[in-house]
Length: 348
Image (cartoon, rainbow, N blue to C red; front, side, top):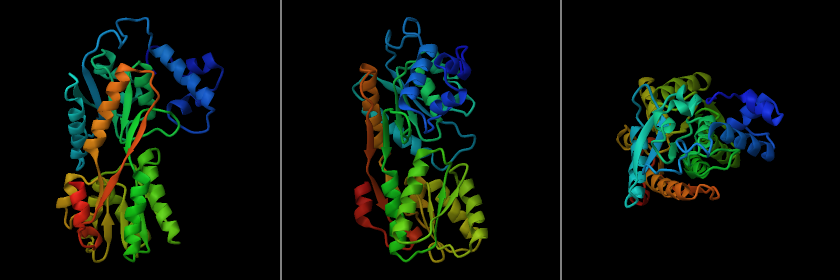
């Protein structure tokens, strides 16, 4: 950690183990709530001094908020996922005199929030942190520097923090049930990293649908959720079982990667294999065949996140708020069903 202190310093100060401190900062379960709060308070005390007026975010407002997302080395299919969120944030800031700047962070920068220039130099008044790929320790780091933080499209399991997210579990259940209702019995779920809460929730929804139908869940965890991993891990799934009839992908980028791999393998979608995704990125409607998916109202989520962050900037001690936004299933050609015009109209 930065500012000249380490996990050991915190552990020694509180009389606990280094592993306990690490588990708190990485949002791991199994820690007494009183101990968790003591660790977080100690980190804030060591990292941010209210007496340092030069660093005190309450002294001068910049009228700027930061939008943090994970930096990708390669362009991905889901770029519009972030853009739609930013559009909502900008709409939420209208009339507030605030504007938003985007910061893409690497894995290395997530080890220490002081590596982020706008954070270190107090150029923003708070942060909206986007997606589950932003590590919990980095989120705690921002808070320990005295910044209000709102999570967008993510939620921590063990720490109370302001969060705006979608109905991952229920939506995954519904889209899996849709496949079951159309006769599919061997359905594979391609999931992402286990530490991403959204992946875990979507995995649980899938499992609940399979178990309710007395079918066996088949879950494959991937290290990332991209077009490339979709292609790679679909090939692995086929090697283990060639009788798969449907794929539930944790997001659309993965699903489109599966569609590409299936086409190259001579597997017809949806005749031989039904594929569904999650997110409803721009590529979903123009894929061939068009992808059945879960539409997330990212613009609305962005608006809610900006509203909440402005409230936190004015009242940093307010009780954390967690809001779940509904989704909409969009039926297209990739699952072999007729498009549902009612759902399309609801999305629009």
